[in-house]
Image 1 (cartoon, one colour):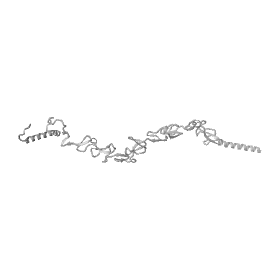
Image 2: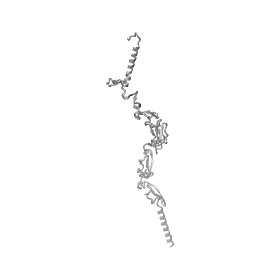
Image 3: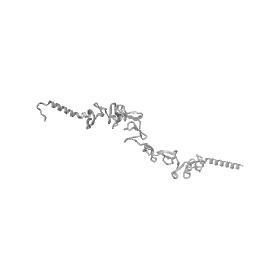
Image 4: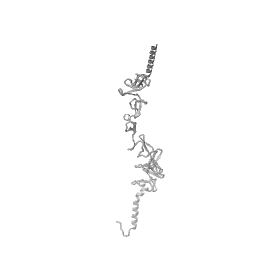
Amino acid sequence: MSLMRVCLAALVALFFSASVSFAAGVCSDGTPYGKCSTVNPGNYCTGALESPSLSMYPRLCRCEAVPGWVQQGEGDTATCIRAKCSDGTAAGECSSTKPKQCVNGALVDNATKCGCPAGRKPSANGITCEYIPCNDSGVSVPEGTCSPKTSGKKCVNGTLVDKASDCKCKSGFQQKAERCVAVCSDGTEAGECSSAKPKECVLSGTGVPVLLDNAAKCGCPAGMRAVGKLCTESSLGGFGSSEIIPVGSPSPSEAGAPGQASGTGLCCCLPTMLIGIAGGFAYWKKPKGYRWI
């Protein structure tokens, strides 16, 4: 009887021990001992029976067995990576968002392989991108700095923009919002006409705004007319512009017009008249006995 009790106790102990071992033969993610994980791609549940662990065995447990994962590399060094990144970029490929590359399911910078957006270039480390300096008419302006050439301009994201709040306006310029506006001594903006006709505010070759005549654009004061860029009186010496006769034109009498000769004709005949008067005076004043030869 006692022998039977001993045997029964031994059977119970063996059963209990087997139950404990069976319960212990499960890995942390629930994978049974000796099976491939369906949660962690490429992993195999192995090791001590009572305390198994997951180990990477991509040759035994295919990465593709877990949806969304693929194998990267070969043999014992192979790993499992996500097939696509969040933006849909395939593993190992460059994203449309430069310089991003899809690596193990994450988008990381790789300027050397994937390039840079417009206006940028790979930085010295070859990983990130940096902005290309702005070009202000041949002058290089580094990113984030003010142009030494154009007043109020700053290089922002590879583009020259008006930023007078950061870049102080030079002499001859006034700040208007974020712009530096060239103004002349009377306050007229460059390219605009002054209230003092026919002056226009223009930038000189040195970039300094000056007032210059431009009657064709800015007009003339009352009583004056434009002659090229200058203004002149509408009438000269009492003679209107319609009364001026060019040199060499026939006199009114020659042209059949009644009346006296106009201003220009008079001016042209004046020397002859003076000679005639002088000659007559000399005739009346000649001494007695004097003979003309």
